[in-house]
Image (cartoon, rainbow, N blue to C red; front, side, top):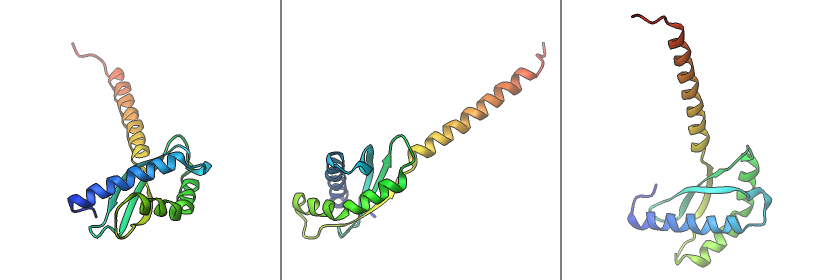
Length: 125
């Protein structure tokens, strides 16, 4: 989606502005939310914002909070960015951290089973 240097730059600005606004938000649904990335279309009209929440499974609650705050966040972007058009915001849950944790757990299980299997084999000397 982000293809031009300007689009990369604007996407990062959008992410930074939104992250600061979410940190300052009084909405309890948006506590402990981290914006992990942003992409924006070449025409700067559509922005995809990726988020993650630390600690627990509040995904739907956070998604609802972000949707509720979308209009206010676009208004703030309009004031802070010098763009002719304020991008439409679309929020997506980024499950990279959860996936990494699952993969690590699986790798640990495999390593534990390999250790158990090596301990069962007699030594050939």
